[in-house]
Image (cartoon, rainbow, N blue to C red; front, side, top):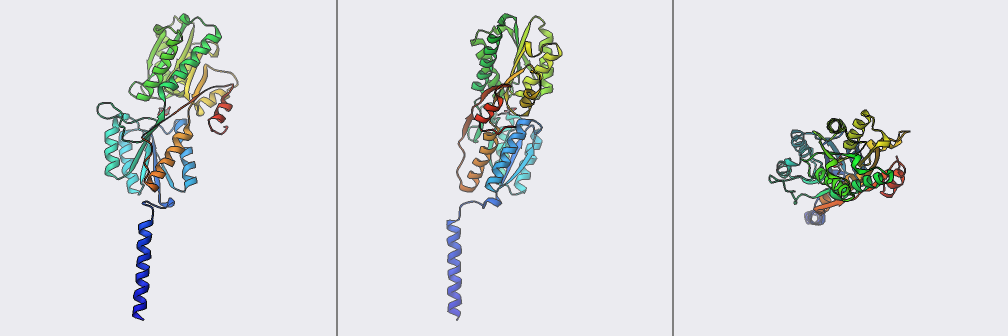
Length: 335
Ligand code: GLA
C-alpha cells in the first residue's frame, strides 16, 4: 500500500518536472501585460496607434495598458507602475528623446522589456541608442515625398517660384522631425525652388497651436510673397501653418500644405466641403506602429525572440481626391 502511494507520488513529481522543463519560458497569453506609452495622447496619430495596439491585444489575448506620458516624470512613474502591475514589457514614444539613458536604466531596473516607436532614444552624445528595438518612419524619404508633392503642385498651378514662400515648420530637437523637414527642403530645392524663399518657423511644441504661432511670425516677416507652401514634421504642424495663412487671406488657391500622418487631423480637413490650403498628406501606418510593435513585444515576452533592432516604415502621398484609395492600399480601413 505504502509503496503504491510512493510510486504515485513519484509519477506525479516526474510529470510536474517534465511540464516545467518543456513549458515555454514565459507566461500564458492571459498573463501577459504590455504597456504602451505615448507622448501626446490627444493627437489622433497616437489614438490610432493605441487602437491598433488594442487590436493586437484582443487577437493574442494579452492585456494592454495605455498610458499618456507627456513628461519625463510621467514616463518614470509609468514604468514603475507597470512593474508593480506585473507587466513584462512596454512600447514607448517618449516625450523627449534625450531621456534615453534614464528610460533604459529604469526599464532594466524594473526588469521590463522595452521597444521604442516613432521617436528613437538618443544617448548623452545625441547618438541613437541602437540596442533598443525601434520602429520609426523613414523620415528623410517621407520628407522628400512631401517636397516632391509640393513642387509638382506648384508646377501644375504654373506659379513662378520666385513669388512663392515656403514655411518650414521645424522642431530641430527631435531627430525624426529634423530628417523629415530636411528631406522636404532638399526635394524642393532640387526641383528648382529658391532656397532663399524657405522660411524656418521653429515651433515650441509639436502641436497645431505652436505651429500656428510659428507660421504667423514667418508670414508677418515676409509680406513679399504672392503664394505660400508649407511643410513640417506632421499634419498638425502643417495645419497650424494653413490656419495662419488663411488668417492672412491665403486660402486653397494660394497655399499648398502637405503634412505627414493621415490620421483624423488630415482626414477631417479633406472632409470639409471646400478644399483648404491643406492640400495633401503622406499617409504613414499607425497599424504597423501600433499593432506590429505590440505583436513583436508579445513574441519577445512569450517566445524570447527579440524584435528587429530597427524597422523603418514607408508612406504614400494622398490628397482629398484619392485619400480613401490610398488608405485602402495601405491596409487602413475606410473611416
Ligand atoms: C512623431 C510625431 C508624430 C508622428 C510620429 C510618426 O512622434 O510627433 O506626430 O508623426 O512621429 O512616427
